[in-house]
Length: 133
Image (cartoon, rainbow, N blue to C red; front, side):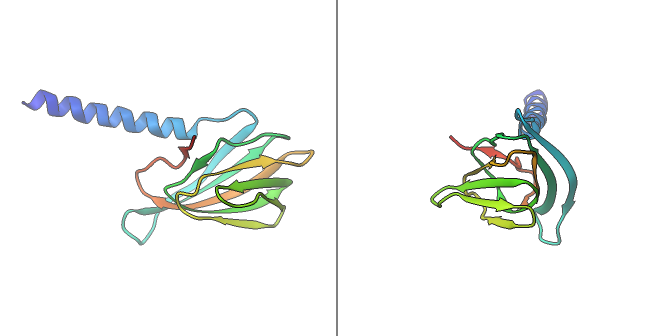
């Protein structure tokens, strides 16, 4: 009786690690640098801040997050396509609020490198990036 519980716990731990690894996998032309990850005063929520660098023409996968995202463009020009909305192009110094669960993607539409500072307020223990078909 004890062995099945141990096996189930081991599979859960391994599966969680694979989900985290998949969320942090780098896409071609996109570099993610984790900056900070801290618990909030709200139970079950955490803040995560990431720098995302896009090579010219690089496009993120269509994805969502288990919480809100605030994107701040550090350099270059990024076009964001949020599901159900017209595309919006932001330049260095501009911000965008992305509601929880909204599918979106980002594309470097400039000639040089583009970078954003992404701040997430998300459910703790869930994958940060959820691919969307």
